[in-house]
Image (cartoon, rainbow, N blue to C red):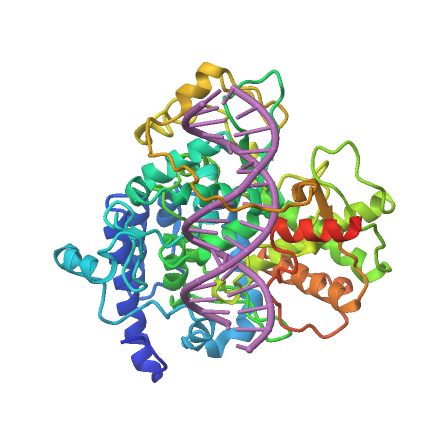
Length: 526
DNA sequence: AACGGGGTAAACAGCA
DNA sequence: ATGCTGTTTACCCCGT
């Protein structure tokens, strides 16, 4: 039975039991992990007579060892945000209605999480046949449900693989290996999944091929990395996935008595954050061992927060005072010698800010409201001098583990030191970096003939959006507002939008893949 | 019903 | 020659 609308008292009870179930579920999925300990700590805190101000420092400490800290909010900022939002939310704190609205409870059942004892039965019932999708109401354990297709899209899987690599760039083969190591399902899956991975890498703009120098020899193929400007979208997509711990934690925190969310003037809600939730933005160290370690060393991602806030501030100023940008239809993406000029440096900066703001907007809506992690053309950018939105700076460029068990342990002096501009990797080192997982090779057998006209790679071109209509600017300002609120930045009156804001709409993928881009390009060529 | 996202299969070129 | 990688197209399924 799904938790549904109920009187307030019953809601409270359901709320508590649901939290308990989620904690239990997560603990089972990641036994002994810092995440598990922290969750129980939180539950203890919660049960201890609703302390006036929950001191979550212990939880923070434990959870700070998990990744995605960059999405965490500084506790101080959260408190400010709470204060700001308090006026709007009083009546809604005790209600789960917004969760219903956001559809976040759709996978929570009062029947509880089944345990290992009946897991086999359930497995047969729901995922017994290889390749079946994982049943929606069963917590997914990649090591247990080896016959169930992981409930993550290929994009998310690739993202996780690359993010889990210290160098944040992987050859496709290592992506295969990571997937096999972390999701044993793929070890015995039909080999088409590799094709899907490659297909995704090529088609999805979120992934960027690192051109290798002629001098470098990393074997066949190129390294793949996450396009920093699309990273928020991938994070959003990852958070959306039903069984990512972060997803469950969001639900957990959302039902906490300290839950609060910011009401936008439009009535749209920002995703709720609590002081607990702030520290709970933590996915599994199991999936991100390297990130877990690295981020445990940094208390907060304040720099990136401030950076985003600053740029959004300037964005708001700019968009509220400037006429629409005019720009050309497109320019070659990164590593091109120079993009065509479309205006002053200020215009370029503005466009970047606009893009970043829109990329960030997706983080402010409930995951279930956003079904696109692709981006609009408005999220285009020039890659040349775009500030790095990822946490590269946090990283040692050490060696990725040679096996799943030592992914985060040793570093390789041969590999260390190559960065965004240095793609050279010693051949021997490269070979050594690879996991020893051999999979059957899939050979194409079909004889389909394609009558293809020569086309220039879509990845070579990016379309520049025209910021011509007021709606577009409005959306951007809304997004800036939303993120500023989320970051706990108080708006100055002078910056307050004059016009009534409408609800934030998730990014719409007008041109969501490279194929579409390619089509645009072909059209523009003709 | 239309549309878009995601997955899969396949063809093919290029490279090691 | 072979296998791997990368790109592209086509099709299907599913949810909205």
